[in-house]
Length: 172
Image (cartoon, rainbow, N blue to C red; front, side, top):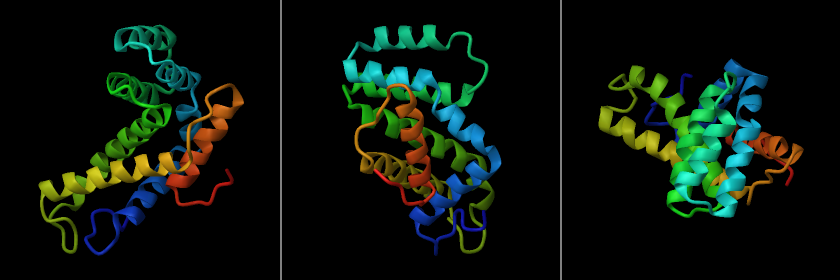
């Protein structure tokens, strides 16, 4: 990822490159993980406006025996708590899932570029850049409107989110 952390490359492009790299690295597993039915169920819990305790208990029961998609499941747990506590909309939940994901991906690689020539000059700047990536992810999700979280619609919606994050045009 030759553009990561570069001060002359807009954060939007850097964000796209992070998602393209994640997609190249994970392939179909990326879509599979983020389209897991437990995340669709969490979306439904947000739509119902259940309490944080009830939502987390239900989510924990649904994911107790999950060994696949662990990364996305954990991000879903964090996002669920935030969305329920804020009384957010389903789109806020999904935005939080993907903003947590890009934060993780950036945290993995960005430190290698701090203080390199032409790159972010400090850890503080890297943190600010990572926060921009989070905002970009949330805005990208919001641009797609409310998620469709029933049955096959959830997987199609997540596919649209990933395509949008990678900078690909999607049909709504």
